[in-house]
Length: 244
Image (cartoon, rainbow, N blue to C red):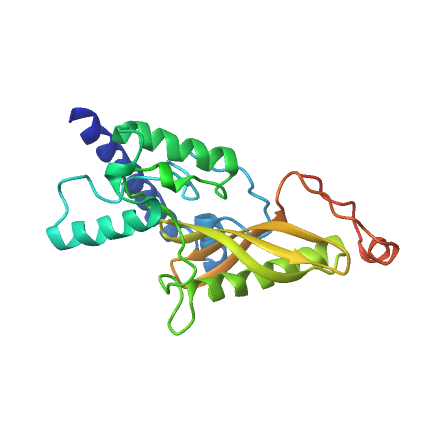
């Protein structure tokens, strides 16, 4: 029990510290653009690696949404329904990890995959880093679905990628997306795109700053792939290809 309390206390402290640092910095900055750049990172940066420093407002560190046993009954029912949708019924899980073990597990996967590949089916608890249900409208405004919303963001991301790399990929579909909620939302979108002779999987990281401003952090090929460039593309590209 003490271990669970320590974890939840640490998560709360992390979030409070980040909020305090953000609030203090807002009064120090005179330019709104500088303020947003400080809070969520500049779109000109390629921040592939996950920042885990709790004193950095761009930190991504999953914390449990509710301390088990403290939520109201109506909230508990809703959380259980969402958890069962993610990983099935708890009694069918082949393990019985502690909250500390799950906290370590999810954050280890977030860091290793840079936010894109997390096995949520292994988790007993609900965290503030969670998978998107593409048929729902949790982050999108109805009647648009989350899948359509992430599709729009992926189209913008692949357009930026084409301009940078001299390619001609077109968006096909969203495979999956993860959502991290803190000072707005961060989306880790995995999607398919193709040109005239190849189909590739891409990853895009997009920030929804305070749920009011979209900022594209980066779009890249999912690691382990290469793009075949034709002669026309080589002429268009103005700089060397980026290797991942």
